[in-house]
Image 1 (tube, rainbow, N blue to C red):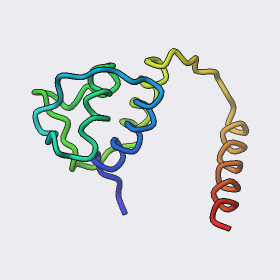
Image 2 (image 1 turned 30 degrees about the vertical axis):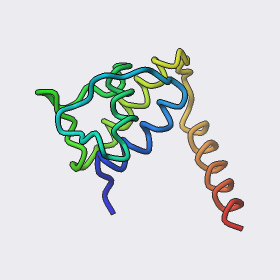
Image 3 (image 1 turned 90 degrees about the vertical axis):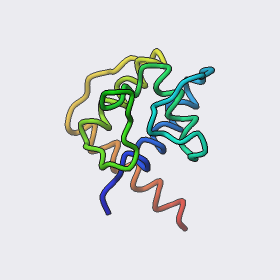
Length: 108
């Protein structure tokens, strides 16, 4: 099942905006104020995490690429004042392995 901007950006947006709360008064023109992800997207926009696709649009129902997801993560970490530390491929594999084990334990 492919990720959509609505699902991917909402879930990521909630994580990012928990770390970086902000007052908002503006959102992208194609994000309904009633959408469950509207507040998270508005905060991400205010903080410069989400910049949209142009013409004040976010396109929440479109697929999101890995590149766009990484860009959102990078900007969120900057907004939260978190340093990005370099790592190796082995570090990434170790992190993924730990996450998988944690997920498996939580399902037990």
